[in-house]
Amino acid sequence: MIGVIGFLAAVELRGLLPATLRPHRVLSVLCVMMVLVSPWLVLCAYRFDPGDVTISITCKWSMCLFAAVVGLGFLYEMVTFHGPNGAIGRLCGLIFLAAYLGLLPCFLTSLRWLGPFEDHSAWARSTAALILCIFTPKVGDIAAYFSGRALGQHLLSPVLSPKKTIEGAMVESLVQHFLPLSFS
Image 1 (cartoon, rainbow, N blue to C red):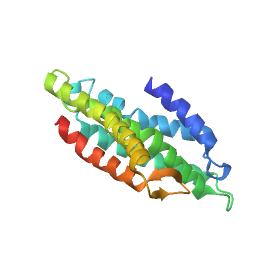
Image 2 (image 1 turned 90 degrees about the vertical axis):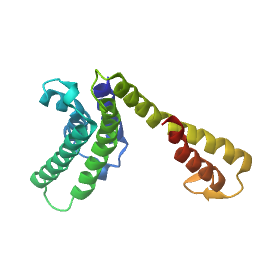
Image 3 (image 1 turned 180 degrees about the vertical axis):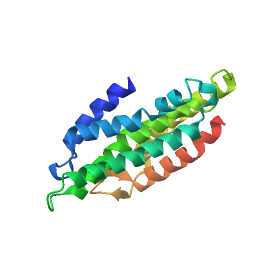
């Protein structure tokens, strides 16, 4: 399911990039998928023994594959280079796609491996970590919205986010700072 979502997101986000920043279609999807599936590649390397897999191992593999993706994108741009034609912009677009759609979700799925699967306390800890990664920002956004509507007097950035207030941002920061402490 994550692979299908990653594939569709890569195709869509690549299409949203300006033409000067749009990397090659197949290369961009391939690079996103390489980084996205890196936690499962770790399981293959450890012969599907999840007891030996930790989050630090999956993160190291993910970062290595991300570096390989950057190198692959650089090599592709070198081979197809025919003069000044926006190669750096396309390489930056590829790095953005691989980091945003591959690396970030890959770390989120790696939270499931905070310990051996047989250890129920590790399973509960990894589930709590995954829930907190989703729950904490959402609660912070909701708190910022309602406190900004009720207390907000000073606009934070009228051009970028016309209704975001300094007061709402402060409440969001406090909620995101103290909320995970209540679950530990």
